[in-house]
Image 1 (spheres, helix red, strand yellow):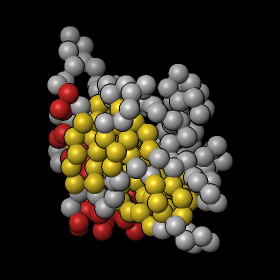
Image 2 (cartoon, one colour):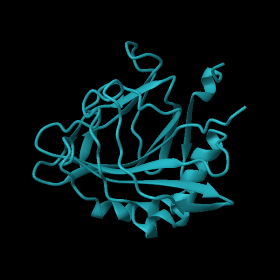
Image 3 (cartoon, rainbow, N blue to C red):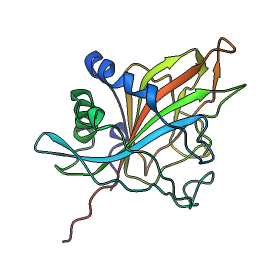
Length: 216
């Protein structure tokens, strides 16, 4: 039975302290050799919250099936892990606890974290080259941390892949959209630098999880 629709999408906010603690780490994100690696700079880790503390779980590669991701499906993607100083800071704990509590996740539930800087290159830069999509999880959150010298990037949420968006918002400074990834669909508009020849970017965290299946 599906959760009532009002709980399929939740909007919440990180504290200013958390945003200020998380924001500086985006300056050091690496490029990758993947198809989006020049404009989506990224680190990736899996954590869990156990007894009120974050555990950094062993690193693993990231892959989505072609049925889910038509842009980079069936591609094994390797990303450098988030820095331990970032993983174990209070701002990270606050962000992960908000995600855990909003989705009633059990203690010890693995949470995948993508830390992404989407850089504005010449012309428009796609923020969501997959198009309108789901990511193959039960729960997902997109957290805007900072925007600089850009226009666009509005986050869009849909009841169905062929429907018009019912939410269009610019996530920034700790604004957090949490949605049921197996029910709703999402994407974001491209970004473009406002002042040419100056760096523009949008910094975001994306959290995802699949619910642990317990034997009955």
